[in-house]
Structures are given as structure tokens and as C-alpha cells.
Length: 90
Ligand code: C2E
Ligand code: C2E
Ligand code: C2E
Image (cartoon, rainbow, N blue to C red; front, side, top):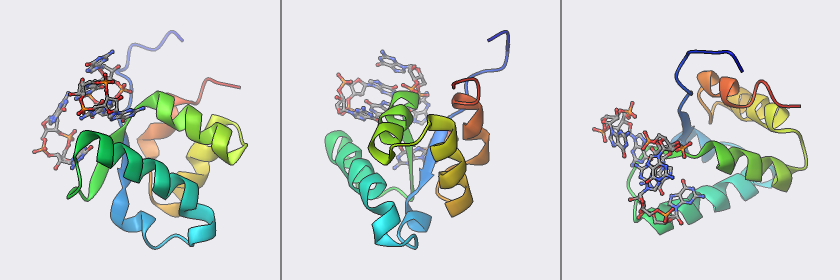
């Protein structure tokens, strides 16, 4: 709170996601594919998602949202700026 910066965009790199081992990337890949299907957005190299979607994914991965964000940034599938979206959460 107290920030006047605009909220960061969360952008998944779908090409990098394909190079992450399936046992780690599986839930994220299925979630992203579902959003693509809902939007009819099949040909993109990247996919913008909602902050709420990152929170939902954190429940699926059973880690705090900030921890998941760092993991995804380390894999190279999430833009580093996205950590601001969940940085203030416990
Ligand atoms: P919805 O949430 O009822 O959104 C209906 C339409 O409003 C969307 O159709 C889209 O044209 C627009 N819309 C809603 N929120 C945003 C937004 O933050 N940015 C933009 N640019 N447009 C927005 P669309 O894209 O065909 O999606 C259809 C439905 O698929 C959505 O219905 C929602 O239930 C689901 N969906 C699509 N993308 C996402 C997503 O990133 N996360 C989640 N949780 N659901 C999504
Ligand atoms: P941006 O948000 O920086 O996105 C840059 C480019 O990344 C987009 O170029 C598009 O090629 C790709 N991209 C980003 N998110 C997605 C996604 O969820 N699916 C797919 N398939 N591609 C994605 P594009 O489409 O020419 O858009 C240029 C700029 O126009 C965007 O820059 C953004 O500033 C604006 N824009 C486009 N669509 C929307 C939208 O639905 N909502 C808002 N607010 N701005 C949009
Ligand atoms: P964006 O399109 O630039 O939208 C930025 C923020 O504006 C969204 O952040 C959301 O808080 C608000 N917003 C935009 N359109 C709508 C709308 O129709 N209804 C509501 N209730 N809020 C809206 P958010 O939710 O974190 O989404 C981040 C980005 O994810 C969006 O940037 C867009 O690129 C993508 N996105 C999210 N949901 C949808 C969707 O349903 N359809 C599509 N095509 N893109 C979506």
C-alpha cells in the first residue's frame, strides 16, 4: 500500500514454459491453456493473466503467492516486474 505506481502486468512466456519440466510446469501449463481456450487466444507467444490467477495458482502449487512468483521468474516464464503484484502479501 502507499504506492502510486501502476499495477504491474503479469505476462507468461508460453515458449519458455514449454522448456520447463512437465512435472513442474504441468499445473501452470494446463491453467494457461484453459485461459487461452476461454479467450480464443491460441497463437500468442505470451499470455497476460490476472493477478487473481497468480493467487489461484499459488493455492494449486501450495506455496505463498510471492514464493510462486519468484519460482516462475526463475524459470523464465514470468516477467520480473510481476513480483510487485504480490510483494506486499504474506
Ligand atoms: P468474463 O470475466 O465475464 O469477461 C468477459 C469479457 O470481458 C472477456 O471476454 C473480455 O473481452 C473482457 N474482459 C474481462 N476482463 C478483462 C480484462 O482484465 N482485460 C481485458 N482486456 N478484457 C477483459 P474473453 O476474453 O473472451 O473471456 C471470456 C471469459 O473467459 C471471461 O469472462 C472469463 O470467465 C474467462 N477468462 C478469460 N481470460 C481469463 C483470465 O485471464 N483469467 C480468468 N480467471 N478468467 C479468464
Ligand atoms: P503490451 O501489453 O505490452 O503487449 C505487447 C504485445 O504482447 C502485444 O502486442 C501482444 O502481441 C503480446 N501480448 C500481450 N499479452 C498477450 C496475450 O494475453 N495474448 C496474446 N496472444 N498476446 C499478448 P499487441 O497485441 O499489438 O498490443 C500492443 C499494446 O496494445 C499492448 O502492449 C497494450 O498496451 C495494448 N493492448 C492490446 N490489447 C490490450 C488489451 O486487451 N487491454 C489493454 N489494456 N491494452 C491492450
Ligand atoms: P488489461 O486489459 O490492461 O486490464 C488491466 C486491469 O484493468 C485488469 O487487471 C482489471 O483489473 C481491469 N479490467 C480491464 N478490463 C476489465 C473488465 O472487463 N472487467 C473488470 N472487472 N476489470 C477489468 P487484471 O484483471 O489483473 O488483468 C491483467 C491483464 O490480463 C489484462 O490487462 C489483460 O491483458 C489480461 N486479462 C485478464 N482477464 C482477461 C479476460 O477476461 N480476457 C482477456 N482477453 N484478457 C484478460
